[in-house]
Length: 173
Image (cartoon, rainbow, N blue to C red; front, side, top):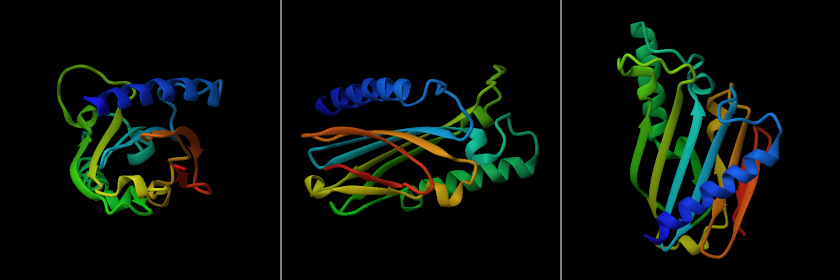
């Protein structure tokens, strides 16, 4: 329950940071993603939302086998958390990964003009209090991704940062 409160707090903080980070920043800007990280009591919860265009090069429903393969390859790549983030310490083990690309694949007869990919990673880190930083790996693989607006929350601190291909490290202390 406590971690859910922290996630809610992180989302609120993120909303405030996002609004002040850039006047033109909105919920869906190609090349921009939103990241929240909560570190608490041996667990790390990471949530990332990015426009499909920033990861796939398109954001409409899949219409060809080639596009379906591209979505599948992206999901496989992102399912390997080491392609997304590296923690400097904490001895983290992945517990759960969920990559949601349903806006691209489901034939639900609803149009999604701005399809997004959402990712959730849950880690068990027996020494979570020893995590002092993390490095995002996404810019190496997704050249249309230009900025990630990140907020983080630990049991003792909180912060925010705008990441890009030259600044990929989050310092938690």
